[in-house]
Image (tube, rainbow, N blue to C red; front, side, top):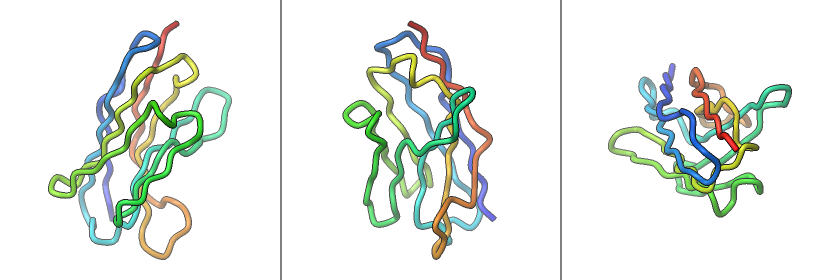
Length: 118
């Protein structure tokens, strides 16, 4: 099993920045991808960004150029630096992890609220 704990959400004004962190523990060796998803009220959960164990990174088009994902392998953490936030970024953000040989994440954090005021 893998446990994921997010931190860093909060309330920020439009144009501001937040940094999310996700700490992983447990069977870390089984994970080959970690990332961030978000779910806004009334919408489906969507991928924001992810990073593979090999360092390959992907971003949703809506956050490219504003968000940066990074990982610290020594601390088993994945971070999401979010700049130039706008109200459309308001959502619950979830850390996710995927085990090898799986197509979709099979571990999820509890979620952290990000609210961007206009």
